Amino acid sequence: MYNDIIFAILCILKSLMAYYIIVALFALIPRQKVRKAKPATRFAVLIAARNEERVIGRLIQSLRRQRYPKELFDIYVFPNNCTDNTEAAAIKAGAVVIKPDVPVTCKGDVLGYACSNLPEGYDAVCVFDADNIADENFLAVCNDYFLSGAKIVKGCTEALNPYDSWIAGCYAIYHKTMSIFYNRARSNLNLSAKLVGTAFAVSLALLNENGGWRTETLTEDCEFAADMAILGEKVWWAPEAVSYDEQPNSFRLSFVQRRRWISGIMDVAHLKLTKLISSETNFFQRIDTAMQLVYPYISLIAAIGGYVAIAFCKPSFLLVSLLLNIIGMILGAALIALIFGYRRKKIIKSVIAFPLFVLSWLPIQAISAFFRVKDWHPIEHGAAHGEPRPHALRSGLTVGFGE
Image 1 (tube, rainbow, N blue to C red):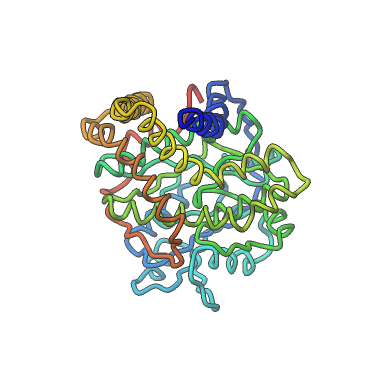
Image 2: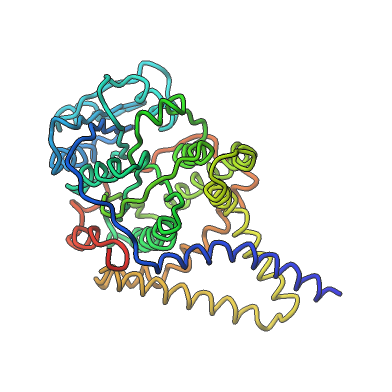
């Protein structure tokens, strides 16, 4: 009796997880590239900055080095709640500084203000975090995609500091895994890429159709992506548009950051699932977005349920199952590191510790399910050692299998 119930539970859990696995397999299909286009899109580059004096200059410098006509883009920095010299550093680097004259508590508030107070004449906004560095072809690639029909473009995120610590290296492997098995796979299926909250561009015409930038959760990127799915708009993945993002160098900061992400996704799920399901726009687009919003719940229940079921049926298999999963994660991380050029000896620690990084999502999901993060707390930036690694500059332009 108990074995039949446990078997039924395992079948349900495996069926739920099968969706994500099947979609990921489409990453193996060759990807169709967009054509190069003449520069035509006029961009307003937006940077929300809170106490980013140490890093804001290098981002602005990378943007000013874009291989894109200077008359077709402007750089705007929106300092908010700062206690350092972010504003002066941004002005010195060559950006236009606009201080919000309304209360702002999070990045979503800043983007809402920025999109409502830009001068006229722009075709699209491009959003970066202050700790990023943009590849010199970023805007040119976004222009190619907009002229190919895109209204939302998400670039490829690389780790700026993959060798600074084991946790930063884990982020590097994680970003590569997401690029291939999430974004590439969905690009091949004509579904939306994951709209991580930096290095993306949005048509202003689409923003106006949406009533501006209107988000209320701490994960403004996830919420905006859900709104776009409700409207029937796809987030295009542009792997050639590369940006480098500074990763946390301590497990504690990583835990705080990822808990904010998961908590925000769960909030968006509560806000948007009903609208996603009831909307009459692209069915597969809405269902896939909904599946991503409930993923934290499904993965948590599947992991706990799976191990509990094994413990009831075959207690002796529990340790074996866990060890096999750990070995599989290490081998997978090693393969990703090898394929994408993370070959310095320092990455070995990250490969070995990758199961800890993956499994630590479970307590984050469990805590967030019951206790939401309500306030945004900054992650200290500026600890990365200098400019992007030569490795990142080489591999960042060849994301995927033969991109």
